[in-house]
Amino acid sequence: MAWRPGRVLISQEEIAARVGDLGAVIGRDYAGRAPVLVVVLKGAVSFAADLARAIPLPVSTDYIGVSTYGSGMRSSGVVRLSQDLSMSIEGRDVIVVEDIIDTGRTINYLRRNLATRHPASVALCVLLDKVARREVEVAVDYVGFAIPDEFVVGYGLDHDGLYRTLGHLAVLEDRPGS
Ligand code: IMP
Ligand code: MG
Image (cartoon, rainbow, N blue to C red):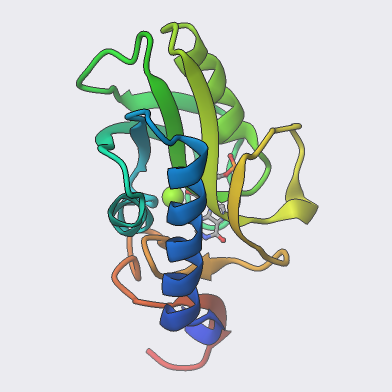
C-alpha cells in the first residue's frame, strides 16, 4: 500500500475562482494601503503567488519559515522559526498567508512572533481551514475553503515533500501499488 493523491477535493477551477474573490475582497479592505504579504514557507507559496496577482494594490511579499517537529500526517505541536523575514514589518499592514490551519498551533505561534515586531496591523488569510481539528483559538480574517478532517495535498500542500505541484487539491489515499 502507498499514500497517493486520490479523490479531487477542490478543482483547479474552483481554486482559481475563490482566490480571485479573496483578492478582490482584500483589495477593497485595504484600499489606499500597501500591505505586505507574509508567506509561510513552503506550503503557501502557490496560493500566495496567485493571491498576490489577484489583489489590485501595490503589495509586497516576504517569506517566513516555520517548522513543526514531526513528519507524516500528524504534527507534534512544537513550532519554531526555521527562516526569518528579509525585511522589517514595523508600521506595516501585514497579511499572513498560510496554506492550511489544522490545530492552529503554527499560526498561533506566528501571530505572537510577528506582533513583537510592531506592525501596524496583522490579518490572516488561509486557503484551507480544518475547523474540526482546532486545538488553539485563532482569529482568521480570510478563508478560502472550510474542509473536513482529511489529509489533503496539491496546490502547495505536501506529504513528506511530494505533490505540491498538483494544480488541484486531492485527498491523500492509501492505495495498492508500488
Ligand atoms: P497546525 O499547526 O496544526 O495548524 O498545522 C498547520 C500545518 O500543518 C500546515 O502549515 C501544514 O504544513 C500542515 N498540515 C496540516 N494539515 C495538512 C494537510 O491536510 N495537508 C498538508 N499539510 C497539512
Ligand atoms: Mg507543510
